[in-house]
Length: 416
Image (cartoon, rainbow, N blue to C red; front, top):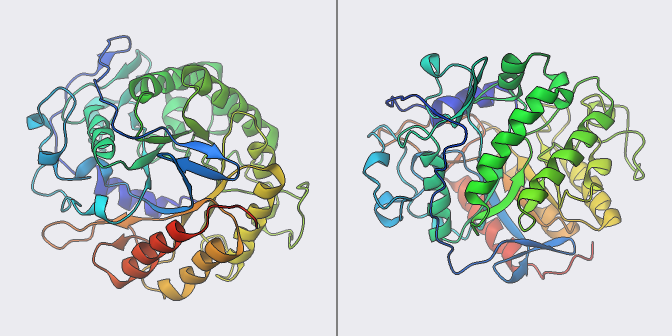
């Protein structure tokens, strides 16, 4: 579960810059950038694995939410519009990870959303849209608007890195579901069936998808970071995911679509080995991983894992991984462990290492992305949450570089 403490720290890290604001431009203005396609291809599904740039392969990647504030050296990246002068970041930004293309990471997960209800009091600095009683507005400001995402896409294209682009957040930070309910009424849970909120969300989807649908840097359009509907029937989110994913496919039939859920299971699952009545298996959060994975327009499954936050011991993580691998096998679709983490204060290698070994040697999960990759400020300050793994650390070498190498070397056949 994406807990508030992690989000609060991340929000501070990603949107720390004191930037000049300007009034957003109303919906309808054609500001689509000219992002030139590189010598690469749009990822696709190959059985239970993915075909990335012409090669079916396993992979390991990272969640990297500093992508908008120093993804790579700006002097080496063609910025849409031909000039990067308006995108120069202040000296307080993290050290630009110019080494990122050389780490072997092929897939990264970044935010593709940023919503505020009041631009005049917005504290998150970077935002892509405003929702309020006067309407829906997109922010084309080159300093704190959609140009920041343009830059991340252009950088990923240059270095042939794929991005899972998340379109919505379940949680409040950075403009989540409740920014829609604040504008259109209702509650968090009613968002999924609120006609006005859904019309606005689909309008935002259209804005983002049409802007980048020709880009080979997009790995998938992800509906939401950890969608939850506590106490709801799982049919609410399943219907919403069915409708929304079909809408995305109508705009862009070529890119993959994922839900972005944590993988919550229910007692009705056809795979019941090692289930119990604990939280992850009750269906309380309104999510049924198996039913959602069966949606025709959902191309692959996502699983998140925070064993300690959820009240489980760390060894349970191996069970959680194996259960979702089995469901993916039964349905014949790829599944990736999209978020997992261990606090810095604990033995990361000793705890997460066995999880990675389970993914590598005991399952056919297509890939895994650890939460989260970080770089420090030039001053030495480390801005992200307790789960961040920083460049230059021993943990990064073992859980990052070595695991990337091992996953890439795995024979690309899904037999487990």
